[in-house]
Amino acid sequence: MAATSVVVLDRGNNTTCTVNLFGATVVSWRVNNQEQLFVSKQAVFDGKRAIRGGIPFVFPQFGQWAFGPQHGFARVARWHVEKMPERLPSGDVEAVFSLMDDDFTRSMWHFQFRLTYRLILREKELHFNIGVYNPSKELTFSCQLLLHTYFKVPDVRRCQITGMHGCMFIDKTREGAVYQETREVVTINEWTDRIYQNTMQEHIITNVVSGRKMRIQKYNFPDTVIWNPWAEFAKEIPDFGDDEFPNMVCVEAGRVAAPIVLLPGTAFEASQILQVM
Ligand code: TA6
Image (cartoon, rainbow, N blue to C red; front, side, top):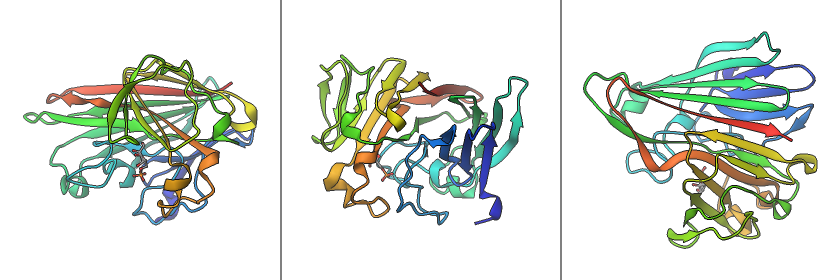
């Protein structure tokens, strides 16, 4: 892979965000030198397999796909740098990445599209602004979109996640059966793989790095997926260490339950803010 495969947003004070152009995967977010994201020690960086950790970008399909790889092609495509990291008057650092249809994407999905991915690194926050545009004059397309965020945690059993109370969820650990969340906070003590629908705009995860809290704010991302493979599935994932499951939790903001339908010439926008509290 070309040497310039990563772009670093550096705000100073050991606060950085590193993006791998392969999938526009955020592979590191350090706040005052503390890494907030989990990347498996077994992760493969071969420009073919999706990176196991960080923030893979899921588009145009979440989950299994008849026409291409699980979770779509965006996380295994090479993205372009629209705007190299630039310090804003506020002291924050901004960069913009993009992906458009090409022979690779059209080999699976015959639609024109344009994705823009704007990242803004603030003191204790990372902002994600996503645009999906349909440049076609004739064709409408539908798609799903999700940020598959792997948070680094000292012990997932001590994490509590707010913002799902009362929400319906598809439980992929129980053949996709649908249930309602009755707990005020979600805790994880077993294999967990759930698609929560119409969740709160805000989630707080307790006991992340150095016992702090992580705040997730999301806009136009009505769904939240929560995943931990636990011991039994950790063994089945080749690029994931058997003993790594206690140190990560995926809390994924997305639009998956009801697909996005984009008429010709129209666009969809969504955003997420991660904040170390
Ligand atoms: O987002 C949760 C999930 O869909 C799980 O079902 C599990 O498959 C996970 O993603 C990882 O998927 P991957 O294709 O990266 O192995």
